[in-house]
Image (cartoon, rainbow, N blue to C red; front, side, top):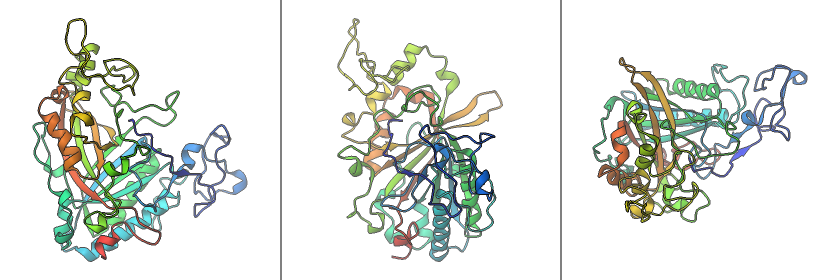
Length: 416
């Protein structure tokens, strides 16, 4: 993924409730006798080894925006949606978001949950954990807040590649969890589920993964399960129009969405058996980029501007007219752009051995109609990749801005 966002991590030393002993040395590694890392375990200080840099990295919970949007991709992710329980309304939702925010703040700091911690992540640091909360279209009618529902949260239109399972789509509440340690991510998932208590019931849950930090010789854009570099043209936080594309302005409407964003979530199954039958040349023509390094077929490196008019010796366009990379370019979609921050998934095999695998596509934008919907409609009209993918679940969520110190996420909506 092209988004290698600004580093919002902070060394964990001196910022957890139970002191995490030490930080990484100049090499980024500090191994104990057994090569392990010390977390919030109650081991004596003199016997504890410092955390590696991977475990010590911390993302702050409080801020202008919620975590998990501009932060670098993590190696493990969980997406989970809840529906409010029968009889639960605005009061119960406010109490739940307060609990969830308290838990998120503690776990992201490397601390145990306030009550009945499971000890799953006992030996680990924060590991870049992020927990992000959003509201679905149905949440507002359930809480009597229909007049606060944003117009941007109108249901997504139908697309030709949709084969949606309604039971794994939408939801009143959505939570995104990401971390660079699988146990830290699961620990957060379990804590969030327990905190739901009787206020909300699980609607659906999905698990994803990415390449682990440090697995390549140098930082790279991520690859998806088709083997393609995915996310080259992602907007970057340093771009002049990044905030305009990704975040609702401070003066936005409704006011409670100031500095928030809209997340489109799609479970996109990749038809890998069909894809892998294609030759390398055919795969590259479907995408419009070289598989080896992500460079456009018109030449250069991954970040070279694609030459859409270049032709080969046969007079044909080097980048085919229906190539995925051509169709998704912002300049081919009226400037439409979104910040893609996905996870891959693999949920086993069908009875005939077909892999149930693909992409948990998550994209962030200030307005989904001008972001995801604009681009997806264009893809619907002739993307070469469409015959190799299937959209099987979908959701659209309003993700409010970050909580200030002493606030919980969504407080301006629920108590405004």
